[in-house]
Length: 620
Image (cartoon, rainbow, N blue to C red; front, side, top):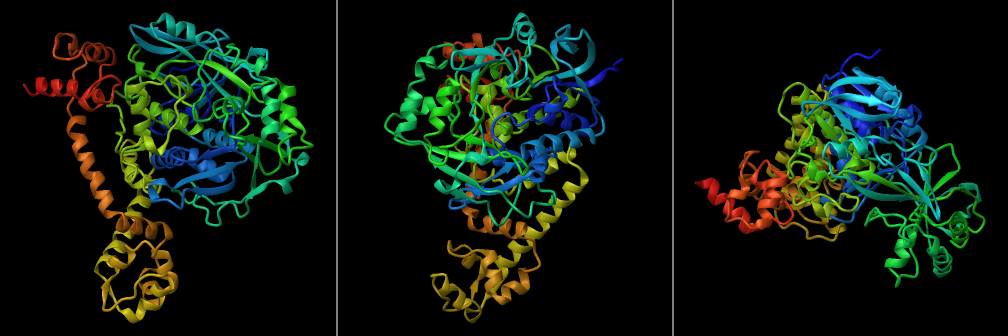
């Protein structure tokens, strides 16, 4: 019935979808196996994509040729660029999306991608021969052969859903858990653990009083995620903000004795940066209110996502507490919030390609690695798909460095430091934030992706056009001198010093009060020279000029880091024989088997003196 595949991807969430796309676009024959074809790319939690650091990841996925950015742009109901009051390193795109359209759009794009087949079944185990994966087995008793397998099981591995004192098996509300894989992987020598995540109740938007809430509109200028020219929505839906209060908190406390989290029924750790409402009340007892974001689930539905109210308390306590939130007095609940506990595998068991160290050509991506968030999952899925293809074709793995992309930071953190609680990306985790901006992801990554056969020629042509346009703008600004009479009125209107004599335009653009787009609108001579260029090119040029010193400084730091990143360590290096190393370093290096000295330096417990010892030894 089944042919042999190059790559089998298990699970069709955000990680699985991107893994399938990457391997298929590069030329591998792919089978995508999911327990339910109707929930491909399901937004299990909030109907939104991007945000701080996560928006940068989505731009990177798009620059490489992945689909998440395109689907997000096609299905957005609201767009906002966060942190515009800060520097460009912090600007982060975010969309509110139509949940149903998101799933349908993803499925349509997958079905229109050559080389992808589908199969609906539960995968109960993998086939292994001589330490190498060679396929999967399913709950229907089928064995399907493949040269590489990518596991993206999400929250389904032995998943248990908790609502108050009730608990039942499930990978998501209304869907059964996946069994068999954890047990087999443990038998093969893998270490596993338990993690927890949660979701808030969904409510009927017709029962809310929005006059008691703060309105939150989208941006007039919709940038989006994709570097391709995707048609953007002409209208946007607004969201709202309201707040909890002392009465809400007191009501929630009445359910604490039945809380699965506080009573120890949940063993897994929850996400530190997305705590449940009961956890917030417990941890931040001094706060008398917490923000609640009221987010529509789509264009043609009344369902509302109550962001900030994630909970696993009994449903009657959830409902009573909701009615005490301003605007929610008459609320009707569609379904209660719940917590879900599931198996994961500490990602220190992976190499930087996301291939497991124990089984050749077996890759893990997404929440199976202990991460949380659609964007983190999609990024890992894409890289696992790329490297599964590379492995099948006997090609070198593609590793993004920390200075290349937020995706590189994410995977480096997971593999070297591991995670004992769900990992979430933040801009503060990256050392080179000025280089890793959302606006230049295509300039950083598309050429590499095009070389390996992932990003299409159309994307490469667009990058070359952007480089040419940006360089021309920068050259003009650096060389052109402007007369005081042409610009003084504008400068004074912006509260900045007028000119005494002709001045290079570069010095004027470097002023914090001045922007290139504003100059074009208000100074005819600038309009004459730069008015023909696209906004994207102009903004790129402005950032390059205003932040030139900072950018050069980060490039210097990258060069220093590259010196140890390019010192390779043999897989069979006998660290135990190097008695100058601390015992902790010897044990950890033996276990982790870092590929480079740079990677070794980021392993938890490895000190600078340990790295010095290694450098001296390698120097010999």
